[in-house]
Amino acid sequence: MKKGKIFILILMSIFIKSYGQKIDLSNTKDLISISKSEGLISALSNLDLYPMYYIDRPTTNELLKQTLLQPYSSEIESFLLNLTLDDRLPELAKPLNNLIKLKSKKALETDVEVYSKIDKNEMYTILNNHNQHTEYYLIQYYKTWLGLAKKNRANYALCKADSLKLKETPLNIPFSNKIFDLMKPYKTCNYNCYMIMLTLKKMGSYYANDRSLYYHKKVGEALDVNMTIFKHEKGNTFLKKATPRTIKLNKRYDTIKDIDFANELNFKNKYLKDMNSDFGIYGFYKQKSGIISICHNDICNYYLIKLVDDKKLKIYETTMCTVTTD
Image 1: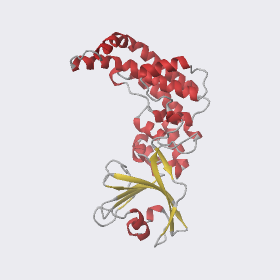
Image 2: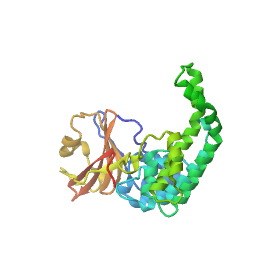
Image 3: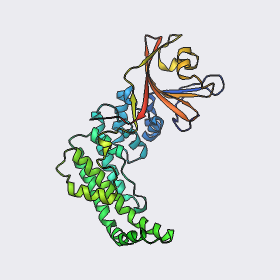
Image 4: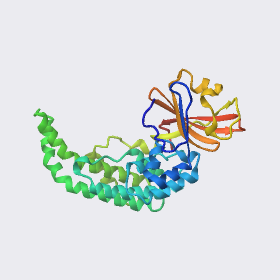
């Protein structure tokens, strides 16, 4: 059974009385209650990779508004980035701008030894969901990393000559590691400057210039020639196939949570085949719509489902993949 996929904090679970079969489904509206009683982070921790926007836009928008009142957290960042869908989400631009501001502040407070590279998917999400204010926040974010780069340039310059010698004359490993560790902060800062400036260029910003872009790319060792993430890849995205499968149910159901998945033969034969008794179904629903994952042997498959005419279940298979975009 896959551990850590969802930690349901509400008592709305259905257990099948046989072996290891388990179904945990939560109502999307209960995330608001969790947020109020236990905090936004507790609510977001339940979501994992589920893009709730597909089934409950009002609840998603409420959670987006709440992120504006919170300090930086990895849970908030993951929530915002996982909402990158096929279409642009206007509601996402303001929280993303706030995320940029918070990450700029976080960068200034981070120890040199643990500088981290900006994720390509973060920049793609921002590029795909920006508004008229995003350029300003990105420029400030760029200036933050540029300032940090200047602070770390002395160590880079001091060690650069020695690093070139290492390629010709083998030295002891501890010494060589020390040299590259001293060079790493400056290189990471330049990599991040490159990522931000490239995003600004793709956005059509006046601020972007090719000379700086080339320097940051060279020093930051950004190996992607054209940074194709912005043109061809949409990573870590929950996508649904265009054509759903419709399955006839044996019984009539009022909501998704009422469906007896393990005993609905058409569903079981198609999606639970070869799993015996060891599987789990986890997810969220809003009345007749839902998102579920079927987990078996540490592998989870995600599906969008919709109850039609009480006795039919429309199922969209989904995938976490890269797609071609214009």
